[in-house]
Image (tube, rainbow, N blue to C red; front, side, top):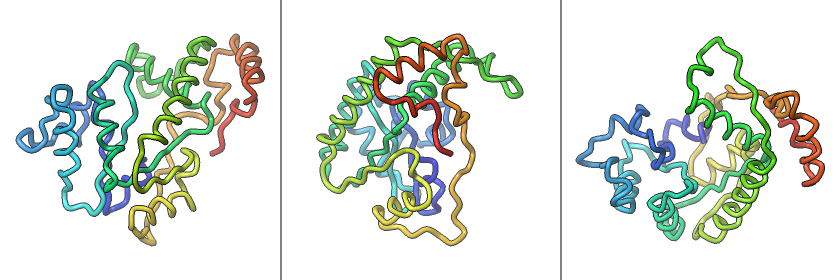
Length: 224
């Protein structure tokens, strides 16, 4: 949601249950007397309510959130937010699940071996693990279905790839915002559109067979 977050009237918090959330500038500067980030696991509903009330003079305040495996506090917060019909929801999904999987794998690898991701170094290639990919795919599809049932009130569903141009206009209108004439969406893309190229070359043939088996050979690349 970086595109929406750059709007001058919008404040969009990162995932409020990330383990290292206090390392991010926006959360580290919060007054603990107003938003107690340290209490997020003990009092998740109070924590989210306080966070959403911390508007900083913005017209629209929100956050990015999705389930974290094993984190019941996060799921409790999702259910509370989903049930609140006064809160507008934007369901954002990445159609290319191989792209989502590779991005997730790269983040895991970066957290485990940060020295391999220093500026100026080529990103390491990913080892394709079919079982892990299939499990990831099943979990994502389950969440996609569940979020549709959880989200009450006004809901806008957009593809991840469509949050530019017309899609961004729809999101702004949904939030009762207008886009300034000078408004520009972030153009930086963290990873290449060549999704197949993110994986070790020795894994390509097995990966392509897997994509054929699940009926999505087009996932080898992603539109700009």
